[in-house]
Amino acid sequence: MVRIESSQPRKQRKARYTAPSHVNTKFLNAPLSEALKEKYTKKTLRVIKGDTVKVTRGDFVGNEGLVDAVDTKKSKLVVHGVSSTKADGTEVPRGIDASNVQITKLNLADKRRVEKLGETE
Image (cartoon, rainbow, N blue to C red; front, side):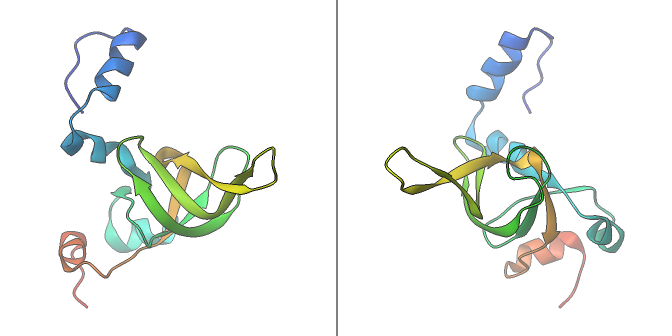
């Protein structure tokens, strides 16, 4: 994140909202499950489409599902099975903050991601 001298919440929020896109991706890191922590010796990892996550906070706590989309502008994840019902009865996906989920299964389709984790498959 951008280095901020001030501890004032308004300046912290402004820095987060006006951060450039290459910094915004750092806000999409989520903690790994205990099994993945031991396997990869990392605590957090950037969430990508195709990862399986478990919701740990909020109204949908305990739900587990595939990440359908990652919104880097809003720093939100769209998880399969997590949706809100509108007044007219239609279901709409509900964005979840990456800090409120735990990665339980990784999408290892990307070779660069596998190299970064240090696993050869």
